[in-house]
Image (cartoon, rainbow, N blue to C red; front, side):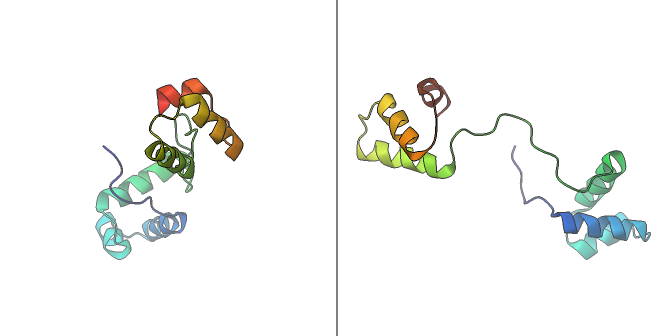
Length: 108
């Protein structure tokens, strides 16, 4: 299941922590900030464990193609569905995206 809403900004997290330091309850902070009580609680709990306000880096391998590269592939294949994979990789290489043939075939 994916994320249902945007991440909270660093300034919003700092505000939540400041209100918590001032002795406000989770429910009161939730009402003031406009975020669910569980979000407020998890932000405070995370800060107590890590002493960090910033987002942690994501796990997993980063994407090889940008969204514009993917759009280019889709447009190329719609225009000519019989385009070969080596042709597509060479066109991507000309655009500045180095991608192997196997990565194109098995990941996208």
